[in-house]
Amino acid sequence: MVCVCNAIRECDVRGAARNGAATPCKAYRALGRQPRCGQCAPFARAIIDDERAAMSSVLCQDAA
Image 1 (cartoon, rainbow, N blue to C red):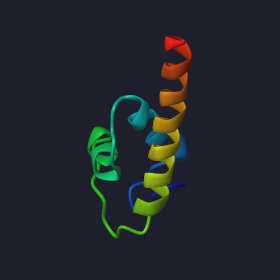
Image 2: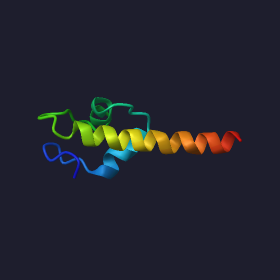
Image 3: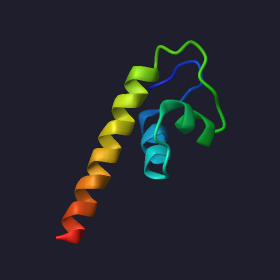
Image 4: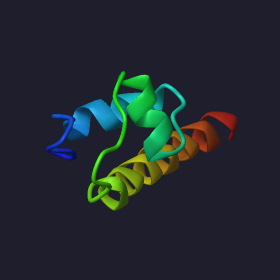
């Protein structure tokens, strides 16, 4: 569980990131929720960064 306050799972954040959410706030909005206590923001950010890096890697491989 990434966010206990909003019951957001890691797969939810990864899906939002794949659909273009570049920040935790944008991911939460895409999921129809909003941050509350903020303790999950660093973990959500790390997941989003990981997904964006993975997408970038795939795009670079496709271009080669």
